[in-house]
Amino acid sequence: MASFQEILYKVKLQKIVGDTSVQLLSVETDSRKVKPGTCFIAVKGTVTDSHQYIGTAIENGAIAIVCEDIPKILNEDVHYAVVSDSAEAAAIMAHNFYGRITEKIALIGVTGTNGKTTVATLLFKLFTALGNKCGLISTVQNVIGEEILPSTHTTPDPVSLNALISKMYSLGCTHIFMEVSSHAIHQHRIDGLQFKGGIFTNITHDHLDYHKTFDEYIRVKKSFFDALPSSAFAISNADDKRGSIMLQNTKARKYMYSLKTLADFRAKIIEDSLLGLELMIDDVEVHFRLIGTFNAYNILAVYAAAMCMGEEKAKVLQILSNTTGAEGRFEYIVSPNEKVVGIVDYAHTPDALLNVLATIKNLRKGEQNIITVVGCGGDRDKTKRPEMAEVACEYSDKIIFTSDNPRSEDPQEIIKEMEKGVPIVARKKCLSITDRKEAIKTAVSLSKKEDIILVAGKGHEKYQETKGVKKHFDDKEVLAEMFHLMEK
Ligand SMILES: CC(=O)N[C@H]1[C@@H](OP(=O)(O)OP(=O)(O)OC[C@H]2O[C@@H](n3ccc(=O)[nH]c3=O)[C@H](O)[C@@H]2O)O[C@H](CO)[C@@H](O)[C@@H]1O[C@H](C)C(=O)N[C@@H](C)C(=O)N[C@H](CCC(=O)O)C(=O)O
Ligand SMILES: Nc1ncnc2c1ncn2[C@@H]1O[C@H](COP(=O)(O)OP(=O)(O)OP(=O)(O)O)[C@@H](O)[C@H]1O
Ligand SMILES: N[C@H](CCC[C@H](N)C(=O)O)C(=O)O
Ligand SMILES: [Mg+2]
Image 1 (cartoon, rainbow, N blue to C red):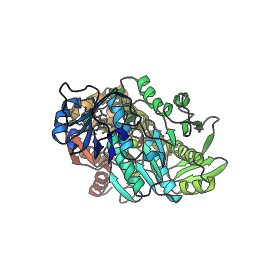
Image 2 (cartoon, helix red, strand yellow; image 1 turned 180 degrees about the horizontal axis):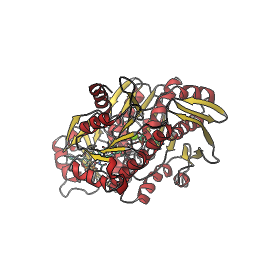
Image 3 (tube, rainbow, N blue to C red; image 1 turned 90 degrees about the vertical axis):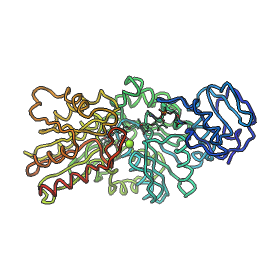
């Protein structure tokens, strides 16, 4: 419980109608969740403008309303605050309502196109092993110490996010590691939070359906670092073309990491094999269980953050060397007779697919074929469809295009858009099979001794979403089933 006035702290107000001393029992941005005593914040979303639900919210018991446009007829028993940006106000108010927890703990945000889940998960595992109770907010799952909670978004809406952070604090967490998606930055989901550190992984094409241009996507990512306070640290990837731009205007302490150039934190790859990575980090040679050059970047970003947080180098490297990555990222399944290797990976952008396939190609010995099963999500960035198909063709010996959460779109149309990226010479090695299970089955049936099958795009996901319905689907499960069925 908090007063209207208390939760309006730091909100840019235009006008108040009513009494701000009124006590509120909750804050909500969804009229359907409003209960008696709630403050309802009306937001202009991408689909609907919830100013139209103010009446419903009041019927459901809202006693305070925050809005950009004040209703023509006011309810005498309700108190109103008019703000210029209610999405921003919602996040600041949720932070206030839940006790401004991020001022009391170490909150670290990870942003970038690829690698967020991996870096945040490694940080969570590292700091837990260092003896802290930690929270993790990620695409795969949210975790409080040992308790696992399901995740619906990479970065939740501000009310759920602050409620979760508050729960983590009340259960004893001292550190929280969270992914910060570009949607979340743009929609102000993280406004009001006080970060102790921010980490940038990389930026390549994705989400252009939402941000429209690559420049706008870069601008949005950069605004996360622009908003960090001077007490925070900001860590960026010097090998990414936009790595230094990201930190250009931040007030935070700046650090860069690199595998290629001079930087505050440097690593060199000594060996990169299916057994893991051998890295020289700060003059120490260490073996890690994660695979692929892209993971050398993720490990280095985690190491840099740990150093910025004052941890002991030897201890950090010792723990990291024995740590595994996040679920559904470069996960191995070996067929029962050990003839074929299956890899399930969450690569759902052209860059991620390129990195994963380049890693596999690098690591294969001799004559093995690489068979790739891949699709692209519906109602998401369409520009990545032909690009992902082109990458798949460049690095694979056989490619099966299939469905990956078609959502409201026609799966065959998505595949047709992918096929536009197939070079003429590669056509004969491509197949299109809409049903993902059939596609995986076909990949297994086409495989020969020692071949490598990559099933890309869904990683940890446990569903396939078609026309608004989510049906259980698990790439790892299906791949294992097919291996058994075909006795490969
Ligand atoms: C495009 C997008 O990002 N949409 C997100 C956005 O919804 P929106 O603003 O469009 O909401 P809206 O449907 O227009 O509704 C506006 C407001 O009306 C309210 N409402 C609506 C109906 C009603 O009866 N009453 C009511 O009050 C809603 O609660 C909302 O506050 O804000 C909602 C609450 O925060 C999110 O749940 C929703 O995520 C949708 C479901 C989604 O799929 N988002 C994806 C694209 C996303 O956010 N992905 C990123 C990861 C991307 C990455 O991989 O990097 C993520 O962070 O998960
Ligand atoms: N540093 C990296 N650079 C490029 N590709 C990477 C990197 N780390 C992981 N990947 C690839 O991207 C995929 C997604 O990785 P991860 O889940 O860690 O990223 P993410 O940024 O959290 O993705 P999302 O935006 O969907 O939450 C991995 O399965 C792998 O294929
Ligand atoms: N966080 C990503 C996930 C994409 C994963 C892929 N399986 C899909 O459904 O498109 C997004 O919202 O774009
Ligand atoms: Mg993620």
